[in-house]
View: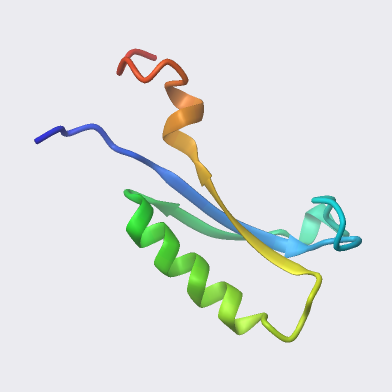
Length: 77
């Protein structure tokens, strides 16, 4: 079993329009948190997305932080 952390960031905010990912107000981004695996990040993402379903401009995202920290996937930073 690998002890490598596969960190994921969940965040969201209101988009200016539905055609692009450009946030209306960066100061109002909702940083949900950093999660140790995709499954827990997806659970948090789903919960936030469900709570904001009435606002079509509100979007939440999962960022694979482990891919940003180790783009080669070799475990070396």
